[in-house]
Amino acid sequence: MHPPSRETGKPGSADIVVIGSGPVGSAAAVRLAQLRPEASILVIEAGPWLPGVPGTNIKNIADLEERASLQVASQGPVQRTYGISPLEDRARGRALQDPEALARPGTFLLTSLTGVAGDMRAAAMSANVGGMGVHWTCACPAPYGSERVGLIPDSEWSALLADAQALLRVTQNAYPVSKAGQKVLDGLRTEYAAAAPIGRLPAPMPLAVRAGEHREWTGPAAIWAHLPGGANVRLRAETLATRLVVDGDEVRAVEVRDQSSGEVWQIRTSLALVAADSFRTPQLLWASGIRPRALGRYLNDHTQVMGLVDIELDEPDERTRGGDDPVAGIYWIPFSDEVHPFHGQVMQFDLSPVPLSEEEQAAGVNRESVGLGYFVQKDLRAEDRVVFSDETRDFYGMPAMTIEYGLSETDEKNIERAKIFLRRSAAAIGRLRDPDHQLILEPGSSLHYQGTVRMGAADDGTCVTDDTSRVWGLSNLYLGGNGVIPTPTAGNPTLTSVALVLRAAEAAAKGLPGLD
Image 1 (cartoon, rainbow, N blue to C red):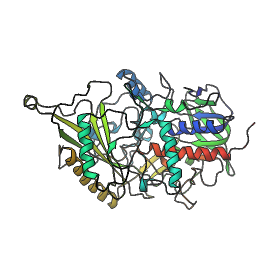
Image 2 (tube, rainbow, N blue to C red):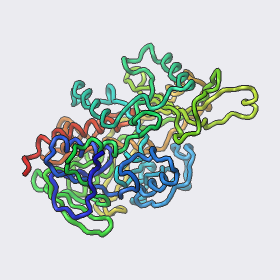
Image 3 (cartoon, helix red, strand yellow):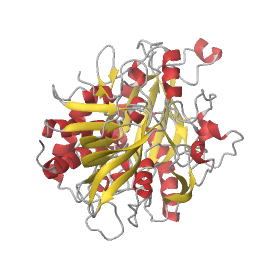
Image 4 (cartoon, helix red, strand yellow):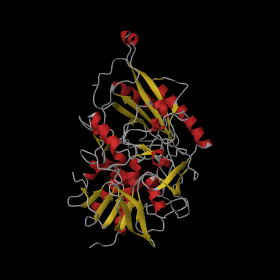
């Protein structure tokens, strides 16, 4: 493993500056180091180094106290543990006395930066070396049909996705299929087999993990393992990028602030790639005076519809229980535009969330309860956006952000349609515990925010970058992350974002001038 070296000094220049150390920023740094091994690469991260192995996924940490301490250290302005909140408290329209009930360990709400909720109360982020790659659940379904960016040919998509899958260690063999899991797969495949496109039958979820007796979940540490030996890649933590210094059509420097000392200076560079997430990437552009009309607009988040399904088994499931992982299997109902226009997933728990009663146990009942979730594509609209203030500052001293976001009539119809599909899938595998009520989570709950710096075919005001993720009008500024995705996706977007940033890195490397 070759992690980036820790930069503790005050560098005045770097050939390449990457802003953000999450999965996408890390993938960009790795690919740029592979393509331009002579270049000096500096990764800037606003959050701190976490104790232990840098960039490891906290799912790999068995000690719950250690895991909790890493989560708190990643929570920016909220350096304390959150109370335990049931899933129902994240349901849409639920009147919450404690807004923090929407927050998840390892993240902090956008409201914690500014005190203003806006229209997406559950919007959240993290601040730590490794970004959300330390905290994510590792689901990596490949985009399909209308989810794919049409600007990129299918043959190129296939190659990019294969590269991204290798980098993230994506597999569908993360968990052994138990008896309950087999019943899930058999029922769903029977239900959808007649019309599903080739390769889109229900299956184990593609997950970023090294499978085996002791699963190793992918975080940026696993991505950094692909850095070539001798690569000049450094990472400076607790360093906030406050401004991109632009001269004509070039970014000449990145202005940064040391979060501990408050010292501000500029780092000269030949190439900047910003992968700071779907909120803080457009925020940095705004703070730099880079303000294309589409900046922050077309904000896209999956609506999530959830239910609990009881599965009756002929005999007890004899898998080993009581391990470190609360999950025993994740199953996937793939998106396809014509047959199943949603992303569905079934979560099998190590211990059933609804235990058998004494009477059921005495009667020999064998039942498990599994979670069934549906992600709904968003009706993309320019008015769904992040608004940046030139007067008010947030916790970090950056332009305060407020979200304007709503569900259109089309969105509401799609949510109702998702409920129908959820009930259909539930009936194929068991019995929906509450057939008359499915949870619809608060906007922002998915953490899959997209579209705010999206790519497009022309500089026509509807996009921020070209199809290589280069910002229109600037020759050496590239963007990465879910915000670049211009399509209404249903599935988890990380694999797509990594594929797109690999493409961006290749274009950027070709455009980088010869180095001394």
